[in-house]
Image 1 (tube, helix red, strand yellow):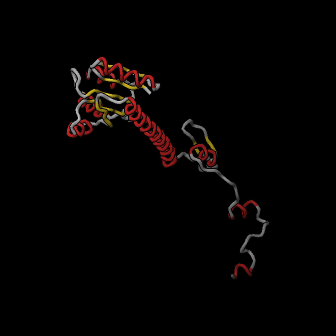
Image 2 (cartoon, rainbow, N blue to C red; image 1 turned 90 degrees about the horizontal axis):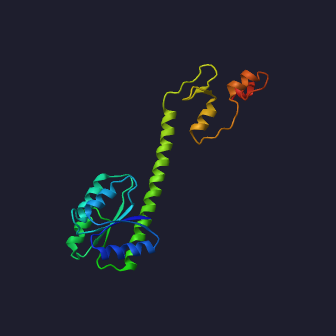
Image 3 (tube, helix red, strand yellow; image 1 turned 120 degrees about the vertical axis):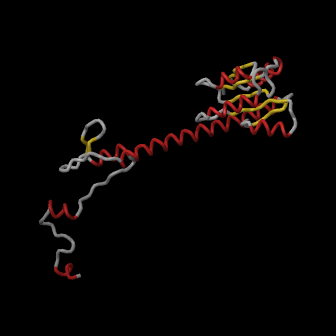
Amino acid sequence: MRILIAEDDFTSRTVLAGVLKKTGHEVLETVNGSAAWTAMQLPDAPRMAILDWMMPEMDGPEVVRRVRDLQPVCQPYIIMLTTRGEKADIIAGLDAGADDYIAKPFDPGELRARVEVGRRLIGMQDALAAKVDELRQALDQIKTLQGILPICSSCKKIRDDRGYWNQVEVYISDHTDAEFTHGICPECVKKLYPWMKQPGDSKEEKAL
């Protein structure tokens, strides 16, 4: 996973990047809040970010608030990195929109575990987004069938969006998951096979 790091302290940033790279992640390093905010606005912005609380130009909570205000379809997973241990400060970071936090100095094992939690959540978010897209496409097909369909008054063929005329069953099969089985209704049996005896034709059956 591609992960953004925003940390102005060189030593902390180097150690943090080293742990993440050792785990197999791609790391994008920034040294202040302004640079982090710029990176998070890019079309290919990382899906996860680890932001230091105190940074030059823009602090971590402000970066988080601005990122959340963007309201992209898939929100990034954001971890706050801070020396602040007071509950009020932790609550403030989470209220700003952070998903998790790690206290400095951090434990490499804890960092890997928390990043893995974020990676799993991003995976579930992507899977859900894919399902929503499938549902939207299905609804679009249903809406197509609910619209006005040009149908021949004689042969009952339907004209599609490209101007071609198709049998009713062909058109419906192309736009839904419906499958067809063929039969003959009683009216058509009488028309096509008038010599065939139909149920209810005998006097006894009519009397019943």
